[in-house]
Length: 268
Image 1 (tube, rainbow, N blue to C red):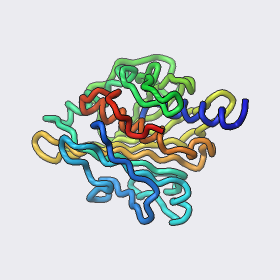
Image 2: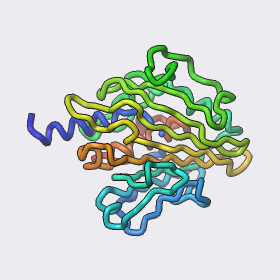
Image 3: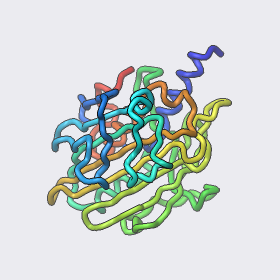
Image 4: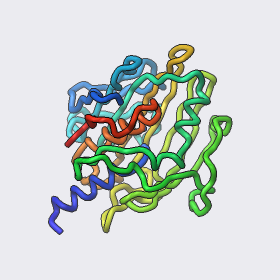
């Protein structure tokens, strides 16, 4: 198979990965010099939360920009020394009466197979994952029911699997901090993510951190950022569209918006 075909297949597999989570015209910005990824754990977030009822803000910093600026991730993200090959962030506002309500949606991994995302390879809507769910440990043998909001306590680790075109992978989810008005949840792959004969991500090379912050009695800030680490294949940083589409699909799911609503956030 020729190299361009392999690249397209691998990117399609990447887009099919769940994790990591718009209205029709989501704002996507990329390649800005001076773009600062500032998660809520550092104060006021950048990008800033989208307005209620409006599109989320999505910002991307590709490898070329990171190299030029000698960029390092915020220490509070705990991303392996702060060095990344690609960073993506989505910030939006969600309607919910409580943190528990958001955790019910976020933690319903058994329902993620209902999410649709835009496939840049086939230029159509496709399944986000074939299946996903919590498992009994890093070996991931026994599938468990979805956890309740009360189970998300500071310092607790969960393990979950995703099955997609890239095969079956195991990930760790860690509740780093929780209070009545905020939660911070980190994920990373603990098994390699492969497609065909290629390893796309070594263990720990694909990471995300998700924040829910209370903004008012019925509004919550939602911030999710993805970091692609040094243990990733060159294939994984050739396009930012799969990451944008995945973040948008998860946001739409959490917001109760049809995940396959046109237009896609990143069509190509």
